[in-house]
Image (cartoon, rainbow, N blue to C red; front, side, top):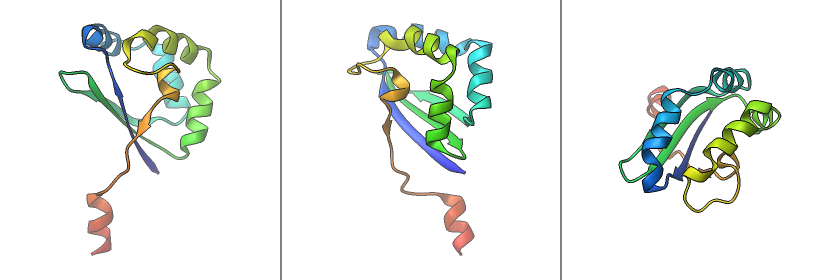
Length: 111
């Protein structure tokens, strides 16, 4: 299982709208994420709008391609487009990926 972490930044004046949208994600979007291999997906956000997303997948590119092929993802990305700082692509194409530097389970298993 591949563990994926990414960051984006939400515009300060869009934080409330972003939170509201994610408190009630469209059911067809939820189903599409699950069907395309986005597992254990969470999004965290600081008060200043720094957003960190995390999910697990068998194959990152297959999960991204799977979502890109869905109609609902296009609608969702369009609805979210104005919320982010400094990107001119759909958010799911503009992730800034973070490198994992510590994993407790891996190190415990190696003992």
